[in-house]
Image 1 (cartoon, rainbow, N blue to C red):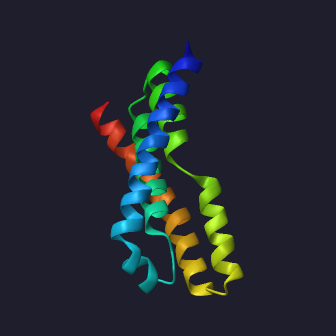
Image 2: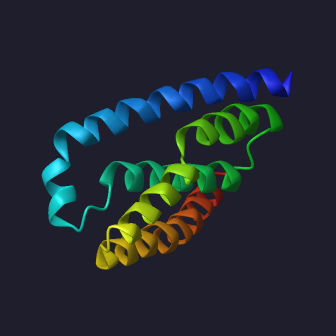
Amino acid sequence: MLILYAGFGAALGAMLRVVITDFGKKHWAEFNRRHSGAPTQTVVINLTGTLFLGLLFGLKASPLIYALLGTGMMGGYTTFSTLNVELATLFRNKQYLGFVKYALITYLGGIVLLFLGLYLGKLFN
């Protein structure tokens, strides 16, 4: 049963990621260009996904809910592979400032938002 919940959640998460990615490409392109090419849509997706995972964990979601929303939806929504391809592209294109900014914002921001989500989850639990 958990596998069905995770699969359904993954489909929803992937669809949400496509919507945000398309929106970002249309509306954040100028911002991306001004900030060393760092892809804002991927940052938004990964950081909001991390915050949501922390919140789920802090709320002590049941195994079924965590399979649906955590493993499934956030697994389909967040995109570690895209992050690394984009980092490699920035580096290959010698956009070193963008590379460093993107890596720091994503990894440090992710840690901060994970703990914020945990804290908020414990408050509401």
